[in-house]
Structure formats: C-alpha cells, structure tokens
Length: 596
Image (cartoon, rainbow, N blue to C red; front, side, top):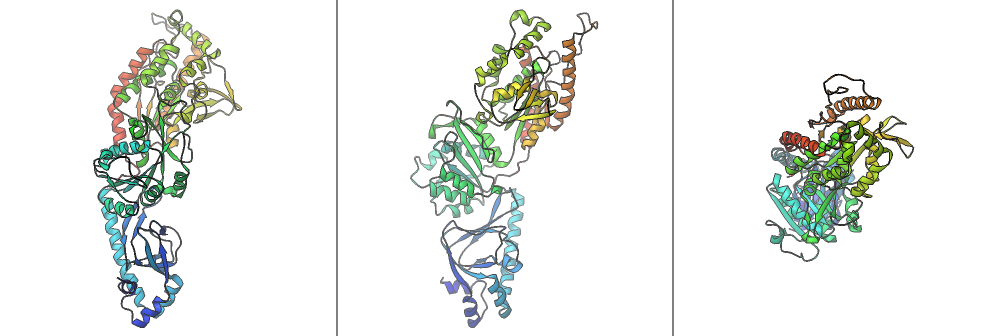
C-alpha cells in the first residue's frame, strides 16, 4: 500500500480530490526508529499522526504505580493523537514504535483551520474515536475480569549470576501464575540453550521483542531476560516492570544506571543486589532512593543458587506485598523469640523486614545478619549464661547483669558474632529502637554500626549508664516502645506479625517460698516497675500488629539468662500454635500489583 492509498483509506476518506490535495499539503513527514516513544501519556500535545509505514504499540495505565496495559497495535492507515487535538487536553496513551515508522503529522492549528472547510475530517475522526473507545472499554472489562496487573517483566542481567536469579524467579512467579513465557534476548550468543534455561523459554531478536511481548502478554506473563546494551534497552522499553540483577559489590554498571534513570517512577523498577554469602566483608547494600532487594546466593555465575527467602522477597517486592516481623523486649524472656523463629523457619515463613527492641534487638540483628535460630541460641548459651555459682540465685544473676552492663562486656560478646557489620550489610532491612533521655523521644536506627545500635537498645536504665552518642543520651528502647510494630508500618509493611514477650509477668512478686509477702529490695522494686511499664507499652504498640504471638514466659524474670533452653522451648510451643495463622495472614494479603 503506497502513502496515498493508506491516507485515503483512513481519516481522509470521502474527501474530493481537491480537498485531499489541500489537506495533504498541510501534513509534514516525520519518521521514528524502532523503540522510539512517539507520544507519552500525560504530556501536552497538539499534533495528529497518520501512519504511512511501520507498526506502533499503544499502551496506557490506570494511574501512578499501577501496571500499564497494551491497548493495541497500529499500522499503515491508522492514526493517533487526535483526542488531544480535539479536546486540547493531555495525551491519554503512550505510543511506541515497534518497527521503523513513517508518519504524516498534522498540527492542531492546521486541523482547526481545515475542518472549517472540510467537515468530513471531523466526521471521520469521530467515527474512529467511537470505535477506539469501544475497544478500550472491552479491554478494560476483560482486564477487570482477569485481574491482570503486571503483563510483562524485564530482568536485566547486569552480572552472570543474574541468569540464575531470573531462573529461580520464574519458578516463584509460576506459584501464583501458571502461564509464564520466558523470552531470552541478548546482543550475543547465549552460553546455553533455551531449553536448558527453562522448559518454556524461547529466544527473541531485539527488533522482534516489542511485538513478541505484546502478543504473548495477552495470554501469559511475558518475562524478557536480557543481556547486552541493545537487548537490555529494548527490554526496559517494552516491559511493564523491570528488575536489575546487579552484583552488590560492583553496583550498577554505567549502562544499567542510564537505563534505570530512563524509567519513570510509577513503574517502580527494582534493583536485586546479589551477593555471595561466603564473601567477606559483605557489600554495602544501602540504596535509600531505590526499591532494592538483597539477594543472597552460593556458587558462581550460572551455577549460583539463591537462597529461597531472597527470591520470595524479590517476588513480593514485584507485586507490592511486604510482611514485617516485630520482636519485643523483655530481658531474658526475649530468648523465647528464638523458638518462635525456629518453628516459622521450619514452615518456610519469610519476612521482608524486621524490627527489634531491647532483647528483641539482639535476636533481630543476628537473624537479619544471616544467623540461624540455632546459631542465635548458641550465642545466648555461650555468651549470656552466668557462671554456675552466680546462676543459682536471682540476686546474683542480677549482679551478673549489672557488672556486664557497667563493664562493657556486651559489646565484646556481640562483636564476636556481628563484628563490624552495618545495617547495610544485613540480609534484609532492619530497624532497632532506643530512647533518648534528652528529647524524651523514641529513636529508630536503620543505618550505621549494628552492634552500637543493639547496645543502645538493650541498655537497661536500671543496670546500665546512659550511652552518650551524637548529642543524645540513650537507654533501652522498650521504655516507650516495647513492641516496634508501628516502626514496620511506617516503613510500608502491609502486614505485621509481632512476638510479645513482655506482656506476661509473674504473680509471685515479693513472696517467699510459703507465699507470704515480704518487703522487696530497692532493685527488685525498680525492675518490677519496669516490667509493668513494659507490659502496658506492649499493649499500646502491638495494636499496629495483624497477628500477635505471646510465648508463655511469665515464670521467668528479666535476669533469667541461665534458662536459655526452657525459654527457647516456650517460644517453640507458641510458634507451633501460631504458625498456621501466620501463614494464613501472608496468604490472604492482597498484592498491590497483581501479576498477569
């Protein structure tokens, strides 16, 4: 079809020869390379485009942070941009060149001048708009029925280990979306066959990627896994969501950074920071301005095996679903957290962010640093149990705690495990609370040295002196916020599971063996007062929780670090009772962005 035929069969049909000649003289030719954005949703525009050669994709979205959708493909004889020309409003869709495209462009000023002489122009445009709106309504109805959200995903392989991450992510995607179509696109020959990579994978050339995604995404989630400058640029341009698989030590390559900057914020690109669990020191993984997920693996390059929680967290970030875990304070009773975590881990429950207060800060930091519940329990057995001659009586156990705080021994104990680790080197985002006595306000630590933040959070005001740091005077975070659920809510967690070890207290305070009341010591009175304060603080702040797990620790006191194994067992029992409810909370949470 030549240019004149394509024109006369579209919006210019019905015009006389003289009219056609006058109208055509007002059009200006303009061409676009494959992949170019011709018009963009939301921008001002006063031009009408008539396609004379090539193909374009028309797509739009339902608003910020919601997945785009393809409205259709257009070819020679079709036109677009007329809505803004007629209404004077912003563009209502984005049009991208799939192939090399030639167009004729009519300015709004010329259109308004010509339509006065040739009313047939307005009639033709009205007919086309009516037909297009009908198609859009049908597409919107179909989308609502299918609950489609993310129709296409690009995984940008910025490091060889990214192929393995993409492979495991496909498996996670298929848990909720059986129809997933992997599309392998690369500037050079792939080091493996498509079938070796994935049973459904196919290779696609860079020029064909846009058409392939548009076609495949109608029935399945199209996942373009791309390597090389041209392939990755095409994948970013044509895909709805983008994940950059990046080596955490090296950071984003220059090309990946330029691609990342080209993506508008509402598409919410994700940076998967891949790190080898055996490499020391760990890389700094603090990207505050980006949606970043820390992905741990073992092995090298294509042989890398990513730990399951990392892949799950990446998937949840993709669909906008985040689960937080809050660990409350309670002195030795915080050891019960370990038993709960043990059960939850056995049932493959994964959290995306952790916050801890006081004793909960010790467990949260160790768990976030990659230690297993058993290893955390071993820390308490080796480092926190007082010598046998001091463990026999409550008074001597309290004296042991007092000397541990005043003698600075806790830092030495924590450094043996956490060394100089920072928040940015942890497996997942961490938050630790402490209280500033000068301002009277809660302080939330999310960056810097992990051990220092833990020391500030566990600094019991009865046993330890306030820690002076950057103009603040810091004590135990549990004084004001014993269960830091609200911290996780403020971070954007959709659901929060809390473990509260401070809301149950003993009823035998100041009683002798025969149950008679005796005047308590000054120290015992202070500790009892703190326990009651924690209990009410727990009740206040756990209201931000969707599910609360309360181990039965009332038989234990704040100083009972000699009872590591009984406390862990109390946590196990609470975990076994709660685990099905925890899984139900996670399973029932509706994602922000439905995948396909």
